[in-house]
Image (tube, rainbow, N blue to C red; front, top):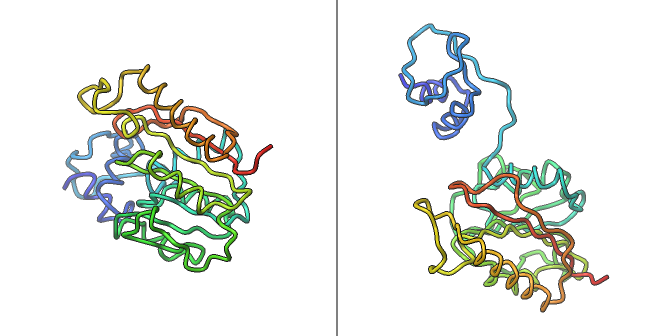
Amino acid sequence: MRLDSYLVEKGFFESRHRAALAIKEGQVSVAEKVVKKPSFSIEAGIEVSVQEVKFYISRAAKKLEEYLKEYALPIAGARALDIGSSTGGFTQILLENGVESVDCVDVGREQLHKSLREEKRVSVFEGVDIRDFQPVCSDGGGYDLIVSDVSFISLLKIIDAVDRLASITATITLLFKPQFEVGIEAKRDSKGVVVDSVVVELAKQHFVEATLKLGWRVLDTRKSRVSGKEGNIEYFYTFSKERA
C-alpha cells in the first residue's frame, strides 16, 4: 500500500493530498526513518509515526498566520467578511484569533472545509460573486474586517464591492497576486510565475492608486512570507477606510 493511502486509512489525515504534503515536508517516519515519497510502499506491521503538527486547512491559512506575526490585525470581536474563502484558510486563522463572526463568500461551491461549515460563527454564501453580495443580516453598518485571497480575477474588479461592504472604520486586508494583476504580455516562466518585476511594480502602483481614490488609507504592505503554490511572490496590503 502507498504510504499516503496508509496514512488516510489509519486516520492520520483526511485525504491523500494532505498526507502527501506532510510526507513531502518530512513529517512522516517509517521504521524511525523519514520518508519523503508519498508513493513509498508500506508493508503490514511496520512502524509508522507522524510528527504532531498544526493542521492548516489550506496554504492560505499559513500565509495569513505568518502575516499576523509581522502585523497585528484587529480580529478579536470583529464581524468579518472573507472574500474568495475557498476551503477557508483565512477563516481558520480569523477564528483562531477570536473573530466574532465570519461571512464566507465564494463564487465556487462545496469548497469550504467541513470543520468550518460546522462552526457556529461561520456563515456560508456559495456560488456568489462578491460584486452581487448583499449581507442577509446586515444592520447597515458594514463589516469591521474584510480579508480577501481571490484568484483568476484582479483586485481592481472587486474593490468597489469591498468599499460598499466595509464599515466606515473597517480594516481591509487584501492579498495581491501578480499573476492575476498583470496583463498577458508580462513575462512568465513555465509555471506561470511572473518574472517581469517592472510590470509587477507598475501593477502594484496602479492598485494602490485605485484604493486611494476610494478614500482608503494604506496601513501596511509587505511581501507574503509564504509564496503562491507555483512560487509566485505575493503581497499583503492592509487599509483603513477611516482617514487619519
